[in-house]
Length: 81
Image (cartoon, rainbow, N blue to C red; front, side):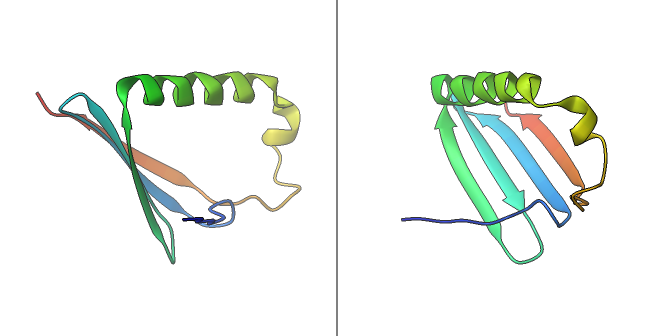
């Protein structure tokens, strides 16, 4: 299955949940809800890769709104014991 959704231009609500050794990710935009589950090792690789990518992006360009990238994001994270 191929799913593509561009969240850049819209407000997004996110959720992260740690439960039973897995990490659950949910993203909700104006027209779509996306959810995925990952093992600990998959989530770790994803998180490390995202951090590495973000460190390489030119910060001065990211902080400006010249491209009209106006979406906002809120995320709630919880861990179930």
